Image (tube, rainbow, N blue to C red; front, side):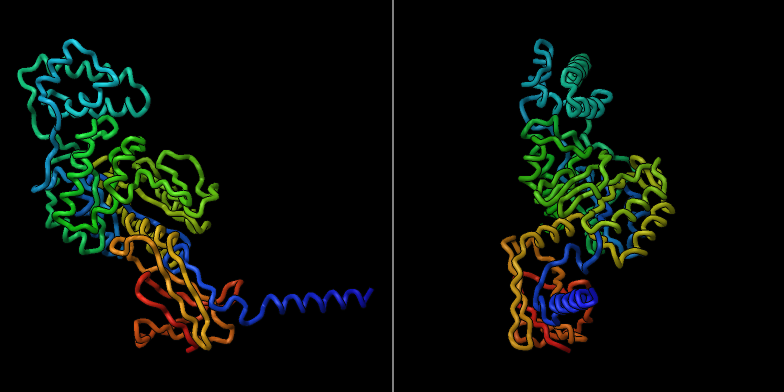
Length: 443
């Protein structure tokens, strides 16, 4: 019996030594799920571009060094294309409504026009009809349009003020202001021209809302800020998504990727239930959500390795929908900042880019004598997808520090600390596709 125990003990030592060979896996390289090998990603986003987002929330974020994504309604910014109805003469459409009830083949045209008729509550008619339509209550939406156009026919005019929902006298932000905010590291992105219910617009007006907003952002801020958008009301209408994905590479509404699960703001699912490599978990910090619950969202990120928490704020300090106060934002953002060593806080566009680059990257790692050579290639457009990725390379167990050589001639040097995990010794460093190889050598 003792001999058998001794034999088993010797065999266990032998196999253990085999699995702990000093050079096993040396040179093996992967791109970490999050930059810096962090645990999760967080994007802090704002909808509607109301003034206190920039005068109250933005300074707090700047002080803490946290970037944000601001989805703005471009039609209310001076110098931009304004809301307008594109289509047949409006009087022709109004005259038809007297004898032809609203139905599926004319609803989109009428829902597109109603906001510009100048009748009391014109914008509300449009928004309510959109809400009914998206909830599948089509007959009620058609009936509402009939009621609205009855008011139009009774009125003296069918021309009204420019349609730009969510405008208030305090909204005085200019494109020059937005350029300043972008230079601070924030993402300024599209929330369409007028914040319309896109699901009930006909094709010309739907395209205008998407394309004109993009054109103005490109004109005043540059191509970089035309990457992501948020279609108003968090719509996931498939027709709208088809059009919007033609215009913008990334939508907060929907990002149909096989490796990404999406839990929208109304979802009751726990992000830990998904088996996808990533999960975009949107949460709306409404006024009835307590601070403890909001902090729990952050804590949840730290017990998984695949959560991308997307926070969706609207009003700030009394201006905008469901406003949060400045002190509340400071407490919450400080809580996030204190955990930044494990959380990557980045704009919505940057997180999207990093994930797509990582999924599309091809890493080549070879060992040549005392050196480990690592290169990365990708098929994505490097003019857009140009973020540095974090590489994790395993090195020999007797390397206590590593010299990283960068550049064509290898003269740009960095010293990397060696770290340990269950698989051995490794180093972390940045690598960008198309910028040559990285060479690792014992320091």
